[in-house]
Image 1: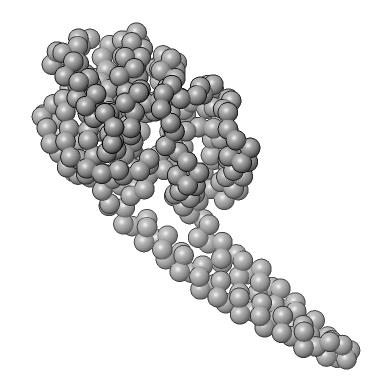
Image 2: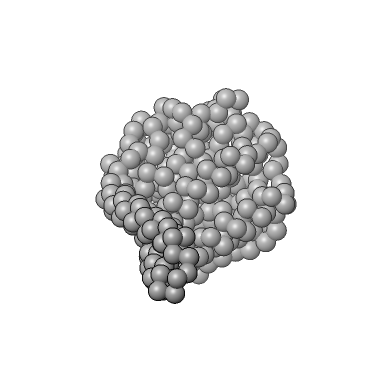
Length: 331
């Protein structure tokens, strides 16, 4: 096992990736807790802190942590790339035989690391924590239930309700997902979509240890929409289905107008509604075909960078990754 301050190992058994944004009240404590758990369960480990352009003392604390322990590495983004791209990019920089992604605020309990490792050694390729309980407002709870129900109905693959992405992923899983080159990676969904052997660990999610959550309603809504767009591409075909239904309704209305004409009934209201439904059906058909073309283009053009690094600390200069996975490399 590596010791604090020694030369970092190139291929640790376990990598723990912790994204940060204004976490000066948590970053030192989370590293200590994660280190203690990792040393109990694996032979070697690394901690990768990736900072999304914090405006408090987080970066200074990260530098101190890296100076005190060579197993702690840091990536500083040149701007805030959001809560989807930055954490995923950090995971792609990990070298461990297995990788754990978790938050810095202790809402992802470090005590789960041991169970994740046990599930991995038992054969699981993806281990995901699933919230058993979590305090949330009535509006937020309702929004989550509606969102999960919508994804279950229209999603391209099963969705695990209450799974935030906190969990363990093997080297094969990480390499496979990195090769997809998703410009806005909905990582928790990609883990399920990939079809690897998956285990679920129920956990109670505690409140934040310090600081305030950065996930206000607008941020959560943006995250949900990005996830929905990436994990429910079949929705792009919904206008085509609606056009079929409206076309059928238009046909029925036109037939009713013909019957009304024969029976001397009200023809013009039925005829007007039939024409209106037919026009909407045509518009929705073309919108659906356009959406299908957008979907196909999106499938063929996954080549956008996730983040641009400003600096990285404690990464071995010999660490080499495919060009598609690392956009800026600074030893």
